[in-house]
Length: 230
Image (cartoon, rainbow, N blue to C red):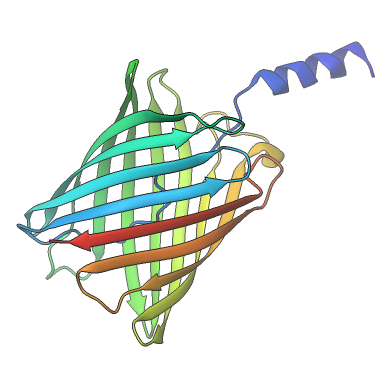
């Protein structure tokens, strides 16, 4: 191997590999929590390469078109048995009025860890339903404390199969910085097969298994989201 090739390999190895959000693996719909209601969620996942994560989220409907939420995220890192607090998050999300023909919202979310501000996420959300299908599209941008802006697209296609159940496919990606995208083999691309239980208005249940499509992505992830609205 030539000297130039060795240098290029060292530079590539030193560059951070894009990853997906380990604490909240969820594609948002445009809907928000109703005014005066509180939704409590538990997000749990186990990954093949990045440990296990347990996150608690509390979402309150301030008005019919605006919700406020906070998260407490914990993790067990791969190769250890250490359970530790990882980060805290705060977000707001306004949505379009019910009378509008477009169902959309904008998630604005800040993350904080033991060193202070970690990142700011801007997530436009668009939802469209047709027949028994629902499509949710979340083209997310994350600004970290170093000033890097990553593109993290996500989408979900769900089919209502009757009996209060939906089956679907969820996709999560990280293309790296918008001004210097990662090489294709180092991008994060992950697809989940999901089952959602929607038969109860106050209960939320999402079960899914995910598979990585590139070498840089976790090969396998199992996740659950359990929510109860008050």
